[in-house]
Length: 514
Image (cartoon, rainbow, N blue to C red; front, side):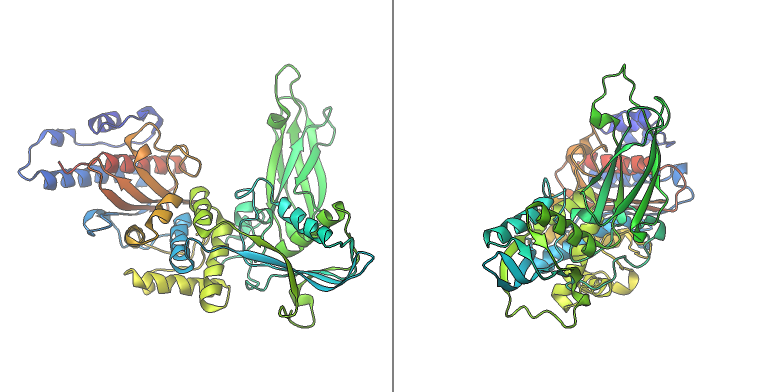
């Protein structure tokens, strides 16, 4: 039945890969209607109904809405006003507001100051001050090696003749408040990189990657590498090498906030008869950093010392000082400038970058209200959505990434946002930021070899028992429709739900009024 559905609408797909039970009434395809457009629309609605009648969704809460972003014409709706958890489709709202309020050309500027005199001996009789700006781009997603940023600061100090620093290295992270986790975030997520703490400074996405390779023989400790190398974290390597064919299982049973991380588990030996590259034998695990400011300072100190610049003072946060820093009399010696906002939101929406989304969420709040907090970020968002026809009292917005289960939106509200951005002067930037099937990002392996592969751009949203997909689908007639599919509370595998969403996208791509 599924294969017949796809053949009828000219969609090429491996139907056997979709483990879904759906029955479609194909007899209706041959019927003639006096009004072709009305019949075509009615057939579209019946087909989407049939997909959503799959038993796999029988115990789920479902909200679906498809509208024309220019005319507002409704193509399909089912429980479209029901409030559901949006997961990462919340990022559409965050990035849209960033474009509208900050502008596509907005750039972050992190400045480096010296407070003191440089002696003829090469010693700085004073402090180095780093004024963080909320820049989320000191990351492998934006550059090949973010540590080059630190090396460039060191080179600037070297060019000034500085060989040692008698004072302290101070990081002023007051651009944001001190709340590092969003309201309603799951405590079990905290050790993982996708739930990295939010701060006004973010080096290497506020995470480290632990890479493990087997030892020379079974029973040896594994060979461990930490990226980036740093003196902030203390790692105990209890990952053992086990015989070839044994499972590789690596985990941490220590709260990283303790400063000591106990890595435990096993890694399998390499079969000498197999041609395996070193990279293929490696196993990696990511861990978030508990204190991004101290992490940055420790890595920075290491890079300075590697360049031959000695540090005699301490590594301090701005709140450790007796009084606020007065920048008026200080000399800025270096500036780190980010890519423009249009590039930042593309990374956020394409790969669903949680930390970057939260950082621009707080940036919006700081720029609009002078307070970089979750509460003010939510206020900024609600102020914006009011202008596009969404009633703030009928939704809940508490963070910028969608990690919180306290966020609540409806499918109709999502399509209102998509419609507003479709009419915005920033339309092209917003549309370009969304993921595309078959390309790098969250849709890389979805809707392949189908008509929808070239005609759908969207944002995914996933967490346990939650799967959403919202974006734009271009029909056979060239009409671009705004759609939102929100599925909450299902108990089957996520892949089955994604397949149902993809089938609806395929049907939208095949739709014609003619």
